[in-house]
Length: 184
Ligand SMILES: C[S@@+](CC[C@H](N)C(=O)[O-])C[C@H]1O[C@@H](n2cnc3c(N)ncnc32)[C@H](O)[C@@H]1O
Image 1 (cartoon, rainbow, N blue to C red):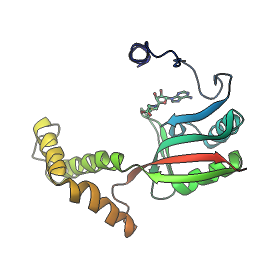
Image 2 (cartoon, rainbow, N blue to C red):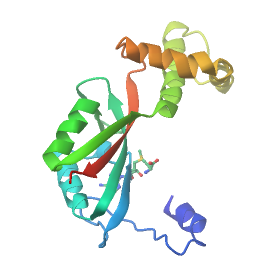
Image 3 (cartoon, rainbow, N blue to C red):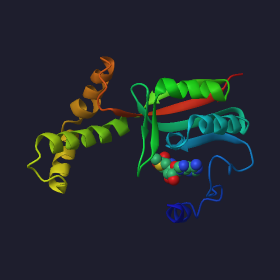
Image 4 (cartoon, rainbow, N blue to C red):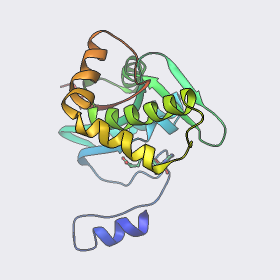
């Protein structure tokens, strides 16, 4: 990924690719905008608060930290084993932001991600209820995806919003953008 990123930005003089652990290798300087893409879901609560607290001091006046994180409808779920992650609800993220300092928080659902997990959950349902079909058929996977895309105004737009309106927790996994701004 780093190699690909370096190649992609090689002609952009104002971009620098750094490799490190976000908990300790934050570069010096002050920033207008700091984006954390799917990072906090790999950090425990204390590390998230410590990271946001230290990033807060790097923001210029009027600057923002933007996070994109996989979320749950409520509570927290720890994925253990080979793939480890922490899935938190939006409310739990708000509590962490409060613990890290005074931020004005805006939250926006990432519906693009919902499209992806809707397809994933449908494939899992098919595997469970129609076990005689090939588990890993790329043809069936493509059919699911194209059926969803073909009915996108309903499947990708109306359905997730209606389910959300009625607080129906499906698909289980969500994704949200959080914009944190300093309180003046
Ligand atoms: C879900 S991916 C997101 C990738 C990309 N940022 C995006 O928005 O699509 C999470 C990334 O966070 C990285 N990561 C996990 N823990 C980290 C840490 N302590 N410091 C820096 N990066 C970390 C992982 O290696 C992985 O590349």
